[in-house]
Each structure stands twice: as structure tokens, then as C-alpha cells.
Image (cartoon, rainbow, N blue to C red; front, side, top):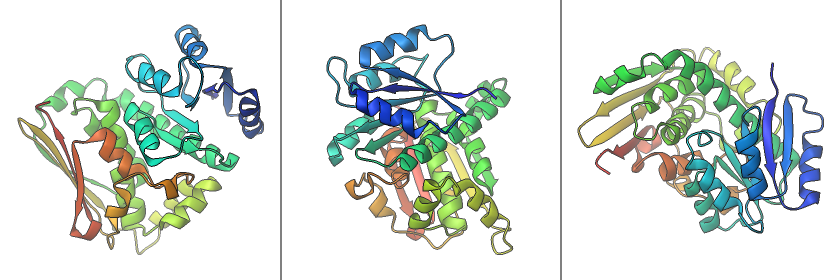
Length: 299
């Protein structure tokens, strides 16, 4: 298996050395280091093999992190690469700016090495699922333009990611849509049907056992028959998704906006990210058991 190639961009030598230390016992990852935005951009342009993930410092002289992120997301060759922005600029508006610019995750310094590894592992899972499913759908993507109303039933996180990739192809910006759809579907499986708490997910992410626990919970008799339903509607001016789970609901209002209190957790911002990046509107019904996401097609 080829290693996951990570481009680390940070103007401070000590920070680059710390990140190298975090990954020193992780042979599945291969790191390349850049001291600034312009050097990183040149490495992206000239790399023999494409990078899989970018770990990007925000505050740098010259081309800073936000400037490089905007450049990456504006280029079709690189816009699919998950960018994890890491910085001491942790105010909610600064986090929002990074997310709007296209960051996959915004990691606030100081952070622990296991937090960074958990976030990188989550990005790898999305990459793996997306690449595998994308290959299967390449020949039939054009036919999805005829889709108007459909209903899909899933049970697992793997099925959630596969369905997200399929449905995202009908959106004006598939790369942005797939993140939001995946977040909503996975949330419906893990928090809705399986009842996994926010705190427990944080703990599992930190020790890289989240997927193992999700798979275990899915096989329990009390969860075996639970499903998540996605209803898809496409009109002339709007795409509307309704995602139903069989859980007890949750205080969704608390998660619609980015929270400084959750800035250092490896989870807890997916719904806010989906609202900001993937859809025109996002809200919940049924006490948090029905997610409704809408994207305008007239813009």
C-alpha cells in the first residue's frame, strides 16, 4: 500500500519538527515540509506524485495560510485535497473564515499529537471511501442529472460515505457537497441510531477506535434493524435532502455554529461545516431526528 502523502506547511522550524515527531511512529504516512506558502505551492505544482492531505499553518509571512488555501481550492487539480488548518488564531470568526475558505478542519494551537492524528485518520477515511466509490460511478455520473425524486436506505457509516459520494454528483459543487452530506448521514448513523455520545466519540477518536466501535455497535441486536432514510428531491431551483434517523434526537441548535469550546476536539463541527460549505440552508425537525438540507440552483 502506498503511503499517505502529507504536505506540512509552517514557517516555524520548531513546529515542523514537532509535527514530524508526531508522525515518527506512523509508517503509513509520508511527510514533505514547506517553510511557507509560495514554497508549498511550488511543491504542489512540481510533485511527482499528488499529495493526499495538506497540514497548513494560518499565520505566515508572504503567502499566508488563508491565501494558499484559497489558491488551492480555486484550482481543479488540488481542490479535492483535504486541508487541515492549524493555528493559534482560534476566535470563532477566524475559524469561520478558514472553513469558508475551504478548510476540511481547523485545529487550534496548542493541540495534542493524538488529536492531530485522529483528524488525519478521519480525512484518510473520507479519501479512501471517496476514491473507491468514485471509480465505480465515473461511467454513470451523467445519468444522475435525470434524478428528480428518490429514496435511499442505509445502515452503516461505510454506506453513508458511499451514498454521500453518489448524491454529491448531482450538486453544482460536488466536492463541497460530499463533505456536508457525509457529515449528516454519519451523524444520523452514529449519534442517531447507535446513540454514540459526543464525549464518547471524542474519546474514541483520540485513540483511533471510533470506526471499530461503530462497527461493533451496528451488530448489536438492538441496532441491527435500524436504518437511516434519505429522501432526495431536485426541482428547477432547488435540491432538498431530508435525512431521517431512528434515534432520540439531539440539541442540534448547539451545533449549527462553530464553537470555540469545541475547537480542540477532533469532532463536533461537522454540522456547522456542512451548513457553511455544503448547503444554502440546513436545519432540523422532529427534535433533531430529521435533517433538512437545501441548495439553491438559481445562483
